Length: 449
Ligand code: ATP
Ligand code: MG
Image (tube, helix red, strand yellow):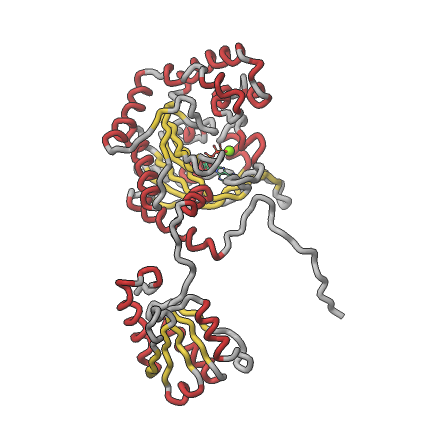
């Protein structure tokens, strides 16, 4: 005897979110805007696997980073013992793929990606264990022009998304040699203030002192603010590069502030680093971070190839979009198809397909023909669906090969329009009604021929 055993209720993994239908229009708007902005700068999309060899990140990001030290979802493949990791970011994978497929063989490439990333952090507002990033990587460009282009592309995206109050912070962290001189002085400085260093900072004092500048610990802020500044250690070339970036930004009226304490989490950055920050999201205020990482491709075994990129946190940007108070059109369809009786149900499938063929979004009432729901209850569902029209096929309509088309959006005071039309004429009629409405009823139109 088979028995359906109830299993205990299973809930999703902590820090990993479901994106529910109510939020889907916002995600779609974001994704479509990203798509068109990046395309308008000549960037091409790349999609890499979510799982990579662990060494890609442990070697690529640097051992002394938050990500590699404590945030990676790593596991052993039980089939073959491989060490694998759910990607915590996408730059390393893009570089791996670019080398594996020799993408820059015929010159520099502008690439972008979007997708989920995984980090084992303490979940809180704006910080999740599965979150989404959109990023761009420009591989093979040497000059400050591409740094500025990437920044301007972000600015255009914020503008197109209607986001204000995101400011740009900029810094240069020079090259390895400049950083090494600065590092010696920095360690000496921190040693003079050892009593102020928290345990994280003490641990990093000799392994990655630059990261101490990045501390969020309030009791260390004054001391860190007065630390030796990398900007004062830049040589001629690094300084010229940094000035080049600023010149283009200034010329294009992109405001920025120079933040000498700005460093990036990953070890592979050099020269230009930047962050886009907002005050509207509490302590998770960085919505996008990026910069140059000229050494990375060679580190991965490729020919020396300069590179520059950024990654933005999608959840944080969506929260900003919501906070901006703008209304996003909910999921709606153009037509809800109501039917009564078995023959009408069959005919309604044919009608729904023809309407969709004409470019309309159609929800077909689904239920068995014998218990299809009363006409009244179907009309209630039609109203709730947000459809502009109900197309009704009942027994009378079947007998005459017609459908009744009822407007569900009669304005106040207007009597709701209802017409009966032969089957063949229904798609054109509905399309005409919707397109004709277009001028004064933007948000309800889904029609796209
Ligand atoms: P933070 O200092 O906030 O931890 P990060 O330096 O680790 O940020 P990056 O690795 O530069 O962040 O990632 C780029 C962007 O991705 C961040 O600016 C942020 O907007 C977003 N991001 C990073 N980690 C998370 C997370 N756990 N949840 C949501 N968004 C995140
Ligand atoms: Mg982090």
